[in-house]
Image 1: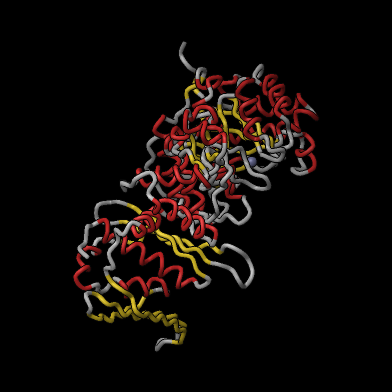
Image 2: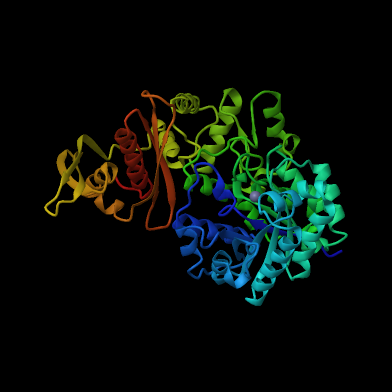
Length: 532
Ligand SMILES: [Zn+2]
């Protein structure tokens, strides 16, 4: 039997941007759009053209997307105005977008109190706005705000709003649980009633997570006949968030009840990218990833030692509901006693370091990893630093060079043009082959200056690091107060396209950065087979 198509609509950039502390730049929005497109999302809602500068710029330019329908969000025309005489609506209609998603009230109480208009005028506004967008040849979606609360209060009117959108030519009528308080059995009942009036193939669900059931509510709506799910990456969204697509996608792909009945736009390869996609968003937002996130969290397939670990080693399926690799995750036996040992051995094997199972250095490496992780190092995130640590312990890392001293100076002053400028300069003393080299460099900040000075002259090793580039630099303060410890993660790349991450931890941000920089350079030398 042919499977039915189920569509996924991402609103990370619009509804997700309502999250406290989230402020996407234009570059962020473009990067996330391409990431979502790459993943295989059917719709990407970019934002609200006309509402702010970033969104207006985003919708002012063309984007080349492979799959995703790029969608603008806006309000239906204001009561008492014509569609052409509403500047907000005109901005949305003129946006460079493939589709337009209108939000409209569908709860009679809100129409009267918030919109201060008549029920009929609200229906007319829906009809006119949808028709205006259709006339501009846009695909149209209608978000029915507060649909479930509205339906409970006045089912006929809520249905009339949905019907008005559908009859005017909206491709999708999306039922929103705006306050997020509706429960799965209610969603299933109400969606079941709606699809008697609007075909389920035109009905979507937009759930908020205020009872921690946004994912369950989305799935309940699908069971009742809805064929579009709206959500965000990592469940981003105001208050308790939106339905988390990162949990919904693997559930739809890996659980037979859904996988046997539906096709979604995301391929198996896309599913493999899920963890990476989720982490990239966290990195972009400089947020710590949720270790306990279903499917993609570091702990999602982590089992503590003991009877479970030995069973897992015999047959992983005994304690896993899906194979971790399917979503790009890894099985993890926690770093402790026996299980930690096999974990370290597995990691060494993965990076190609041959070592005997009972080599005492493995136990020592395990102790050092545990000690260092306790003070803030994150080897899970810093593959290259872990590899260096392991190779050092096995005596495989030569002392290529020695930084005997460095000095970083930050100065703020008024320049000749009367402008306030900040100038940073770093001086580094390095001993290479018993010879001392002194290099100085100016940078746009202390870490940049230090990096430039350090890599200016490494004597005979210079040629090995020529293609080395720092691609990302992230700082996280690990505990509050004046005693805070800083963790720096640096991502590097070289001429072969390989990426790696290194870590440094210190109470001093320059010192932490220096450690991560050094690891990156030394890793590159090891990788290039530079002679001792
Ligand atoms: Zn919402």
